[in-house]
Image (cartoon, rainbow, N blue to C red; front, side, top):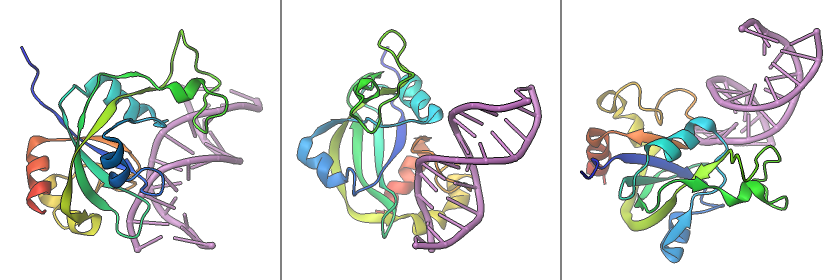
Length: 156
DNA sequence: GCCAACGTTGGC
DNA sequence: GCCAACGTTGGC
């Protein structure tokens, strides 16, 4: 039986990797995640074909800018083994990798950015627990319910 | 550039 | 196992 499609939101700083970069390369290994909760979502929750809201953080107008999809199962992030990488983790070994990632595939850009400021106005409808609008808001990979997905994209 | 919020580390 | 110190995230 094919598992039910799930939905996610993934943040990226456009200076590092933007939706335009993803459009250009098509598919990208989502490397550099060094947060256990975010890792667990990728490793334990994601399935090929899941929907991804692509979010630009740390920029003039943070918000959702595009749609992508999960294009692989989780596998070890190569950058953790590379001493020259900024994501190198000396505690990780090939036998016991610490960090996992999935490949993310470009689907489309939104017609316009859905700004965080606008998303916040729908916090009640999204639910208090939605990490993007919860206080702190540092999680870079988070689950999105089907209802939240629908609501967010209706703002486009 | 500032700084609040938060996750991680490491001494004890 | 506690918790202070530290580093990072990310909005503003």
